[in-house]
Image (tube, rainbow, N blue to C red):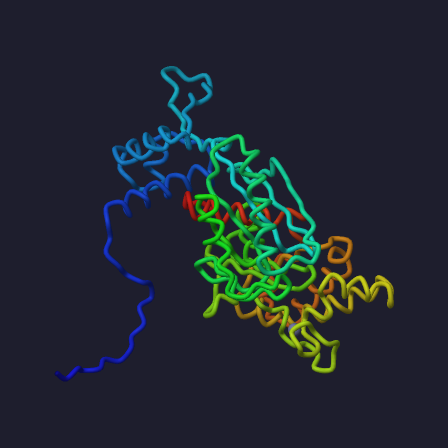
Length: 375
Ligand SMILES: [Zn+2]
């Protein structure tokens, strides 16, 4: 038999068989997203906003009320005659989410959050040099403690970890934790019988900022400054993954070939000037004014990204006493100097609105998006 080879063609999106339950799940996510984003609404409002029929909306809302995810209440009467419309709203206290942040140096932090992203319980444990399976066991211990104290059904577990993480929640490479091809999500799933979502810490942080940090919809880059430097991007409302799940790895772009040695083995990566320990050394040696010089270097490195993607917001997340002030101002100024006016015109350069909780909140967003389709 002869086979005719056809040239490889790329589809824009994977297409597959469409099942009735997919449609139902889609409708459910659509309505939950409207309630999550815009607050209480009547069934008629939901039908108008979603384009679904009143019958479909009533059917799906009925299911959500039965699940306890949505509650009904009468709209406040404003001097109107007649029966007030019944409003439905997301029951923000109906579930809890277990979130874990592994981005900090030497400490693992977990929390319980409600569906509004509010932290309700917190547990921290020192890593004390744990690596490999010992570090995995520590994560399991934190999750077990939080599941134990949860007062509502747990919607799922979200984890933000350093390193490259694939779509299945396998940590491909996280040198600081000694993880290589570590199936973190699968291990947690089988131990706790809950849905689990694992993502890179900077990607997790940008999702937190996008959903709960008063971010706009025009393209957001969050640069996370800690022991290392990473970044995450939300473009057109979706997290950018990249070809090998390593989008945002700007920390190891070389900005000075003669610069300091980097953990990755090369010299002068962005991380060698911007990582928190390096910033502290720099301030100790050259005074606080030297932070403006670092900011200018960061601006040089990020201007091509801002120009290429026409970002709306660039957010720095990490120790505010180092990032906010001369460093941030220099980043802002340098990017504007090096890009077209249209790139800098409405650009916002700021620090994170969520502070130290940005990864925890983002880990909750992983679960909200994965389980309810909201973000
Ligand atoms: Zn490097």
